[in-house]
Length: 218
Image 1 (tube, helix red, strand yellow):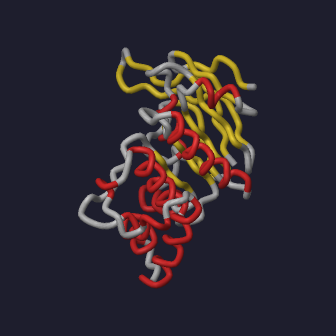
Image 2: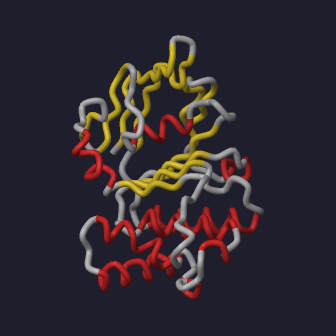
């Protein structure tokens, strides 16, 4: 599903985000990325989504070389990806249902189809009863679960989550993780970066990064 072949990323002559990274993630795997701030976790996830391009090496996603993919093809690549970041970027002038519907409307779905699938996605993260609420009326943990619903409404093959439980209390973090694990259980490939030691202790596979280099791949 995902392969990094001797990948490096340089932002400037004296700034290296990733150095000679080689790893593979199989279809249906749940993989955690661990490491301190600045270790390169976010850069690695952004490369999979073609938000960053490698300076050297190859990043292969679903058989496509990210370095060679044309800009016009990037939206089609991302339709198979669910992207979850610390900053939810929910639109505060509309309901959470409308926020979750938006990716489907952008790709040409009818409003009826978009609403049906958005309600199903909110149900999966336990927020269907809040469908008509405004984002600012929700807690931080609930907003993050809305962002997960929005990320999976397109039924992606891969979910990329960058510190999805950062700044959440334990109960909210557990609900977010449970939602991600539920998608993994039905075959979605999940890559999750985290500082959460409790989360990492329970993980089957953890990839450790330090100063842009691979430390351990278990």
